[in-house]
Image (cartoon, rainbow, N blue to C red; front, side, top):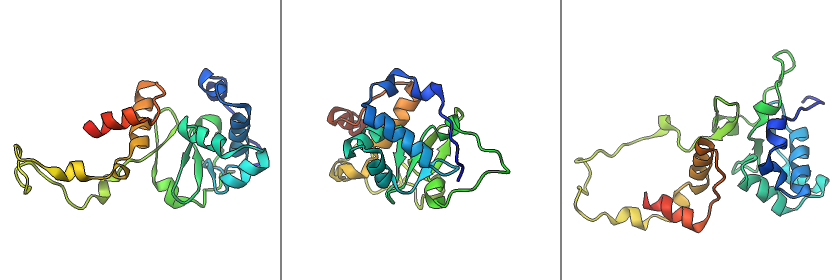
Length: 179
């Protein structure tokens, strides 16, 4: 892991970044300094304690999409490739390869978490071939629990494409579920 890190003014001097608490901003800087050469941090809770930040500060960074969390507890800095360029002769690949496989690098250099891996789809339901035909009531969709719908990922994608900062609220969840 490198001993030096860069920070892009395109990210850290935005109003969106400046609206955060000083401890949330400090935590963001500490996480960036502790990240490996691909922007992954395996011990975000330890870094939170070192920086004097709170759980809420970590949640703010996730909610404002400055970091992307994984189920394993690892996080990645969303704008890592905007902040840092590592020369090939100095680059050390991350040890978090499973998490890295779940990411796409957008044209602007930001990481985006894949909502669904198309190659892993086993079956596809086609119109006219399923048990439930159009015009018949299909209760299976309404019976699905909310945790099946990836609300935060959908809102993240919407924010990225629109340049807005929608949050995962109950109202937004209803709109997404309706579609």
